[in-house]
Image 1 (tube, rainbow over the protein chains, first blue to last red):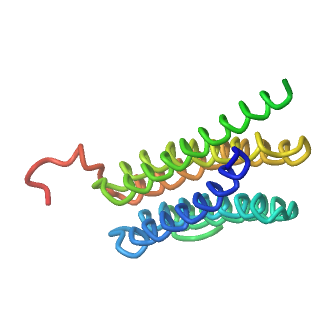
Image 2: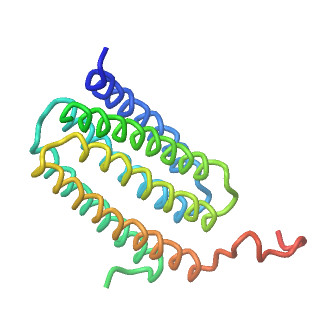
Length: 93
Length: 109
């Protein structure tokens, strides 16, 4: 078993581990006493989903998944900014 | 010589993948265990930025140049946006009147 096989195997294992961490973060999004806790958890879930998308792009060899990952990062960022601004001001103007 | 470089790159990729998974796990534990929204932001922002950056670096070490540049750009984007989002959330929490746990006096609750 050479190093390239170990690497591709560990990328798959890594994607599964990150998925389990997403479920753990989802506990905070469900429980979180304040709305800001939930926004934090959703932001973290967005980052981890991006990592999973890039790992899948590597494992399956689909390069266009990287573009999807970039769009996903942008959408996650804009969602967080928008919700945080709504929590701060009570309106989105 | 070429095989040696390939081995070294593979070893570095494996190492940074393990480091990235470790930091993502530490961030998740901090999100679950710490007592306050500010503490949770403190834990998750740094750990998640570093973890995602290390995993993207590990993927970039194993790719061709064009894909590697895209992955590095993605890591730079995360490096800019993740602290900004955390700052905005912390400001919203502070301005809506959530007191940090360390500045609460014992009989406040």
